[in-house]
Length: 80
Image (cartoon, rainbow, N blue to C red; front, side, top):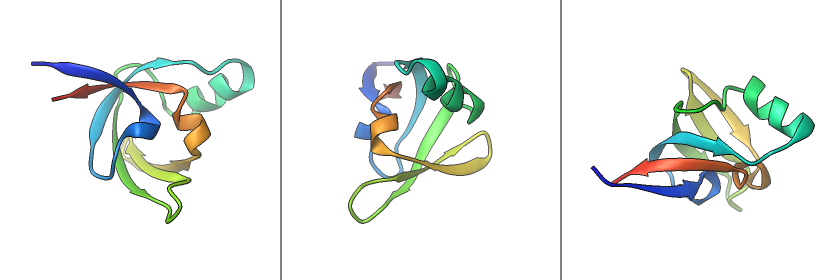
């Protein structure tokens, strides 16, 4: 099965992928880890705001919203 690396910000509504790597540092890295962005967790994009920022996600059986600038720091493994 092929997989492709993309950032979370590039995923579209309804796409699912697993977290591969976080490029954040310091307090932002700790914030993302506290929200559940850990390796191999599956994330589904639920919807985006009308101007595409923020985006609503589902992970660990709960929904949360993050900014696109934060989503750019999360590398995803997308199955094709």
